[in-house]
Image (spheres, chains in turn purple, blue):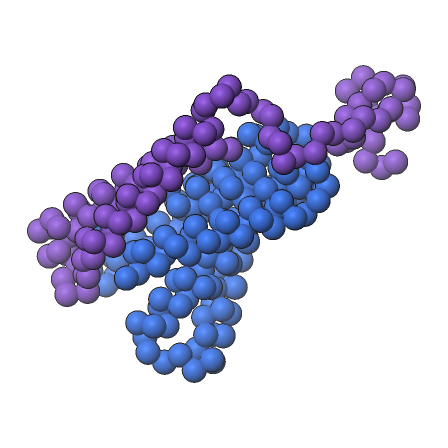
Length: 105
Length: 154
């Protein structure tokens, strides 16, 4: 998940920066008029926070060769298909060998 | 489907805040944006994933659940942005306002970010059989969404 969330946080950081720039343009200010409140300081702080956290998460996610191993998830136990006796993962719903519906049992 | 439920429950939530005595419009909008909207939207966005978990019992990798969450967030975001641009910015500010609204809104990935996390939580729930990881992931998604809404509401 970190490999997806990290880049998204960096994207969020860039979006904050883009928003800070867009709100300064004459076009947006004239289009939205007095309703527009520009808080560049908040946007820049938010951008920095998102960017730093995104880089940290991305480095953690892409580093050390992590792939599908997620320590917090429990290893799946195995079971035998009640129809053909094949060894299956517990979360299996339909036996890939004989097609038996495991859910209904 | 998720968007319809979000509109319904956000309306209920907004009425709840109004009935609590909040009459200042700026404070009302901020409280809806920070308290009601994140909780409601993050709860309904993974609806399709929850259906996949409970009814279809899909056997997917955790990464797949996270990607499904990303796509659910993307779909919700597209619909929400279109509604804001055409139903809010357009009637109030006209065509230029619609373009300005698009420039302000469409590039933010918050919905995809939050639902990626809650989708990952659904995956952990599916694999472990425990709901606690999903609740933690959902709480994180709500917190991220609320923090973003606060940052752009100030």
